[in-house]
Each structure stands twice: as structure tokens, then as C-alpha cells.
Length: 233
Image (cartoon, rainbow, N blue to C red; front, top):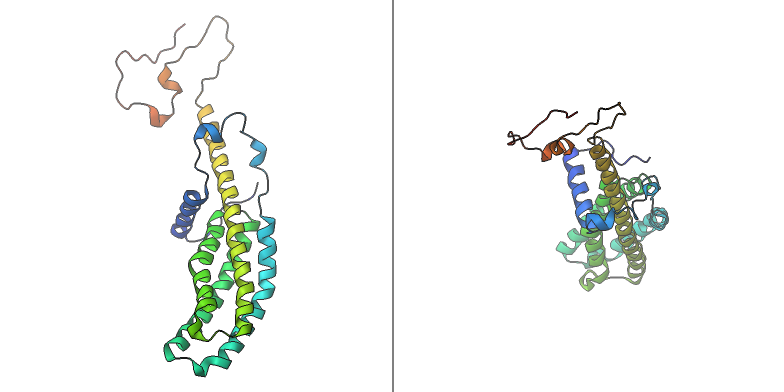
């Protein structure tokens, strides 16, 4: 069975897991998700790495150096024609986008290949909240003197980014559904352990109080009137 968790900052990982489960999990009732007709336990053991996302990440790794070289060359050409604040914005944006891109691609690879929801959720969040706005700024703000080569390389990069956002969203939905199913199967196993085992003794039928079959968090801590914990013969 694949490993879903890896060492890391527990608070950050817990937050990313919560985001993944709340945003990407299907909002269905327990009856519709886990009815006997749909309780396919083989789904838990199925590898859920998303092939289209992996292909996009693979080509992105080779394309990004070409994009970076083109962006730096074009920035050098037009740098002296830009106002001071645009110079600072473009340089800062290029540096941060480069640093975050390396982290983003690593998280995407790890999260997709090993089915780790926190890493893949971090990849999706970085793509949506930082890379996409910065790239749209580079591609749409005419005040930064967009050159034809810049427009072309930014458009290809934007295509990769949008495709990765959509693919990672689908992969996260599938993975969170699998984790929910796995959690349900574990809970069912724990509840079944509370059921009384009927031993075949001669002339000794066993009848337990209904409270004994309930999980501990459903039992009352106060004594119940008329409660009888003895075994009837």
C-alpha cells in the first residue's frame, strides 16, 4: 500500500491535509459513498498517480530553463527603458518565480508519484496563488513593454501552468476520495471489533446489554436505571 505521509512540519502538513480534504473531497453522504454496492476495497490498493500531470511536469522541467533564459534576455534588452518601480517589480518577480518554480515542481513530483495529499495540495496552491498571478502580470501588463518573444514564451508557460492546475485538481479529488474510503474501512474494522463473539457452549446462550455493543464515545458515563451487565443463562 502506498505511503500517504512523510516527515515534515506537522502544523503545515496538517493544514495542507485539511485544505485538501475540504476543497477536493466529494461532498456526498455516507450512504452514497460507502454503500455495500460501492464499497470496493480493491480501490484502496490501486495506484492513483495521475499520468497527464506527470507528463506535464516532465516537459515543464525541460521548458522552464528555456523560458528563464528568454525572460532574462528580454529583461536585459528593455531594462533601461522601464521606470524604476517596474524594474524592481520585474526583477523581484523573476527571482521569486524561479525560486518557487523549483519548489513547486518538486512538490508536484513527490505528491503525484507517492500519492501524498499535503505535497500535491501545496503544489496546487503555489500554482494558483503565486505563479499564475505573476505570469499573468508578465503577459498582460503592456506598461512593461512586452516583446514578441516574451509574449510567445509566456503563453506556452501559461498553457503548462493551467493544464497542471486542472490535472492536479483532478488528482487531488481522486486521492482524497481514496483516503476517505480508507478511513471508512478502518472505522468499520474498529466498530466490528466491538461486536460480541458467540462461542458455541452447550446450553449457555449469551445475551449482552445493548450498551455493550456501542463504541466507547457513545456510552454514557452515568449509571443507567435498570442497567444489567450480568450474563443471563
